[in-house]
Length: 100
Image 1 (tube, one colour):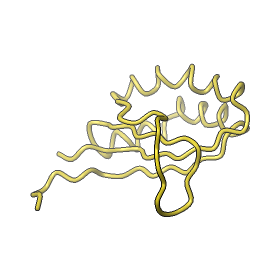
Image 2 (tube, helix red, strand yellow; image 1 turned 180 degrees about the horizontal axis):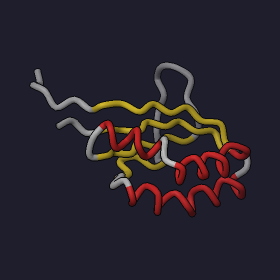
Image 3 (cartoon, helix red, strand yellow; image 1 turned 45 degrees about the vertical axis):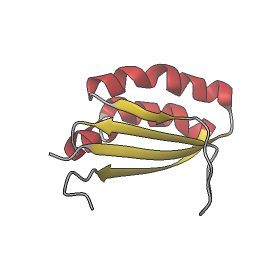
Image 4 (cartoon, helix red, strand yellow; image 1 turned 135 degrees about the horizontal axis):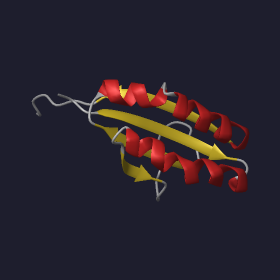
């Protein structure tokens, strides 16, 4: 079964306020078995419009990735984060088929 992923791009406008979201998101992500593959770090954006922060989370499958996002626990975190950051998020099913 293919894994599920969150691909997030974030611009933080108030780091002090955003820190509360970061401090509380670990428990929610752990509940859904999420694993950070990318959490900030250096990047180059040769195409498109970048944001200042990039995050990729891996879940055991697509349905779990969706369930985490739509959970009441994560909705509370969105309310904490929203005043302090602007973000784009894609929830996507991974590919586990044949490779070229």
